[in-house]
Image 1 (cartoon, one colour):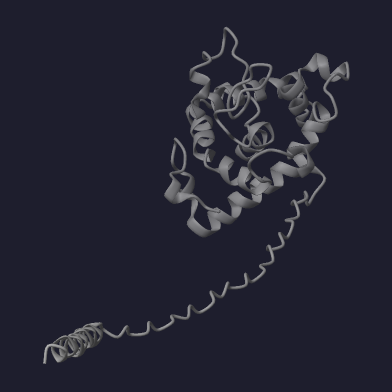
Image 2 (cartoon, one colour):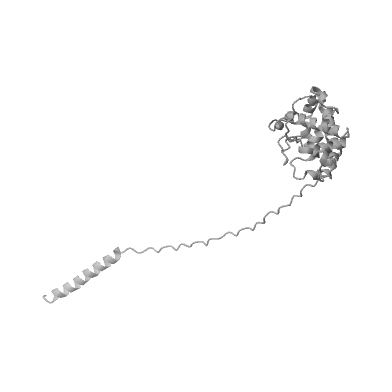
Length: 243
């Protein structure tokens, strides 16, 4: 019996140990396999080549007549100058009516505007390198209005008409030479010191280019709107412009 006891203890002890080990084994959780995540490859979009737009060169306008070549670089075209000068027809008429005795030659209003077109395109703000001011390019003298007043179109046109009338008188009523004297002085004309665009060439430009264009424009606007269109004694308002 004493011999069996240890043996039984060994047997039953061993079984207990086995039983305990088996229990621990049952309690260990079975690991769940992790799913493998497959990352889709990134697709890099291919840039669509773009073609730069081709710039079409714009051709510079060329003068349509020989005379327009004199006006390269000037802001207004010949037609716009004529339109602008026509604004002041009322002023010319008013001076001829108010002071007729001051003008010996019964100045043609169209001629006065043609001179303004040739000089500055009737821009009252222009000043030449010689100091001539405004629409008719009047150089201030002791017997004229002062410099500041000559920027006023009404004053400037009056003195331009006065000087033009005197120049025609000095040329013995010869209109072509009178215009040349107005532009370049009598002495310079006869000494041939007026350059390619001055003197008699200037006179021809006034008579042959500017005068007929101003005359045509005024005639067309008068036919369209009547004589009262030019009755403003200052200048035509912007809402009355005849283009």
